[in-house]
Image (cartoon, rainbow, N blue to C red; front, side, top):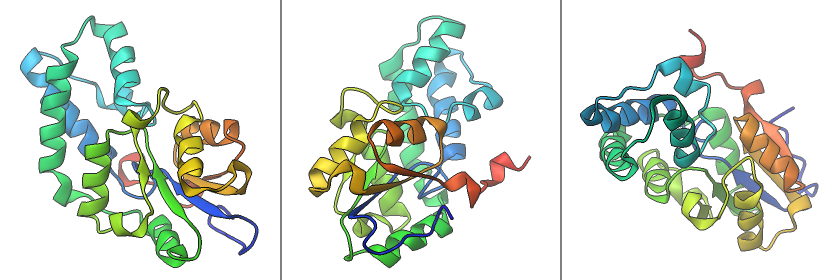
Length: 200
């Protein structure tokens, strides 16, 4: 099972944040729309939800290929404000958050995300999950986001745990590929959790 963990078979746990610990995609999409609107732009929802595992930079790279150059700093500034204002609407992914609560203090645990540090910290704080973890690695901490393995390898380094002794919980193909490239045991949480926006 995706969520079965056998004591002694691993030495550290790494959790993605967006879509794994917390169902954030609808708020990220809303906040991006707020950021884009002053520039006369909008992102089609289906197009966005097909790319939820990407870093903001990679997402905007693909968006610019469709619409042309975007004033990224201004768009991201508006997006960040809107996201922070909406944090109270977020809900934890209970089946995964429960695992983190069960293993707190038993093994080192980190969050490793393609998101911006301020948004990841805000998300975890708003849902009461931040205190469960020994730290977090965000987009600003590495050169390459997922599907490159950098965030996971940095998380393992900070925990002092060998990559092959880490279990990773992820909800995206990019994240699972990053776990594989890092030599870690990647668990696909989509086998046990389907967010509301995917059910339509």
